[in-house]
Length: 319
Image (tube, rainbow, N blue to C red; front, side):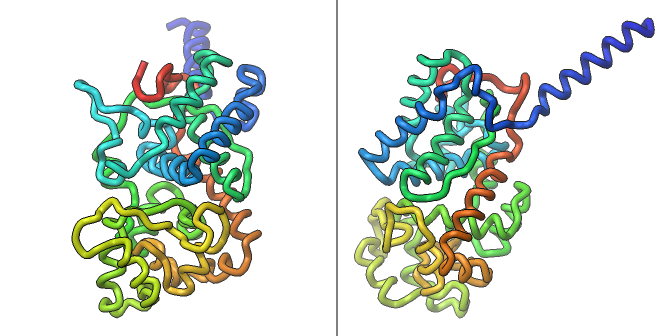
C-alpha cells in the first residue's frame, strides 16, 4: 500500500472511531430540531395532567432501558414473529408502561424534524420532564443517542435489579453499570413517585419482621395498612403508592419513610444502612442536586452514537 493511501486509510479509520464514540451534548439538536425540548415538555405535561402516575412510569422505563445494554431505547421495541424484545422480560411484563406516551411524542417530533431525533433521546427527555412536572429537579439532558436495532430479554431478566434484592446484590448490580453505592441510594429516590404491584411487596408486609434483619424491619401499622391492599393470596396486580405521604409529588419523603421502617419494597428498606438516607430525609435540596447528577450519569451508560444503531421511524420497530 502506498504511503499516501495508507495515510488516507488511517485518517478514515480515525474519523470513524471519533464518530462512533462521540460524546453526548446538551445542544445536539439545537440546529436540526430546535423545538424538540418544548415538544417533549408539552406532550409530557398533557400526559401527566391526564394521569400523574405516568411521570413515574416514564422514569422507570428509562431506568430499565439504561440497565440493559445502555440507554438505547431497546425497551421500546415490540416482540414480532422474528424478534424478541424486552417488554416480556420478568421485570417489565405487565408492569412497564408509558409506551403510548413515547409513541405520541415521537409522532409529533417526526412531524417537526423527520428522521432526526432518536427514540432513546426522546425517552431521556421525557423522563426528566416527568420528574420536573411532578415537582422534582431539572437537569440538562445530554443528547445524541441513537436507537438500538437489537434487544435482550435475557439481559433484562438478569441485569435489572429486583425489588426483592438485598443491599450487596443491589450494590453489585449498580457497580456493573458504572454506578456507585451513592448513585444507588439517590436513584432509588425515584420511588418517591409511582406505585408498585402487590406481588412485589407481599413478602415484605407479611414476613419481614421475622427475619431478624434490622435494616429490613417494617412498621406494624404500615404493614397492616398495606395488607388491606395486598391479600396473602391473589390480587397480585393491586397497587400501592411507593411513598404514601405525597405519592404524586417528587420530594424527599421517600427517605423519611425508610427511616420510619415504612419502605414499601425490600430493595427500598435495605438502603437504611446508608447514612445518605438520613441526610436526604432532612435535606430535600441535597437530594435534588444529587438526583439530577446521578440521572445524568445513568443517562451516559453505553449510548450508541455516531454511525452506530439508527434513528427509528417507529419506536416500536427497527427500520
